[in-house]
Image (tube, rainbow, N blue to C red; front, side, top):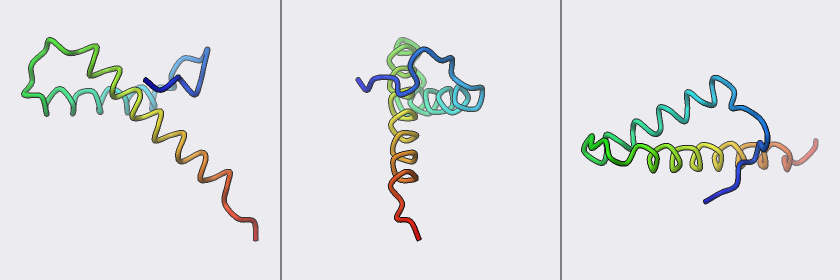
Amino acid sequence: MIPNPFPMTRPEPMLQHEIRMRAYDLYERRGAVGEHALDDWLQAEAEVFREKCAVNFARTNEPTR
């Protein structure tokens, strides 16, 4: 599991929405079986945070002109 890149902060509404949408996508892909809600949420959270970290890393490492 990937650690939270934003420790001690509450997810912003848009970030939380992205996580919720990703978790729902995972739920649907599994056949809409509701017994894995926590697993879906944690996986979605990890994927969204990983994506955000990659974008932030790319922005901070852009070559200067």
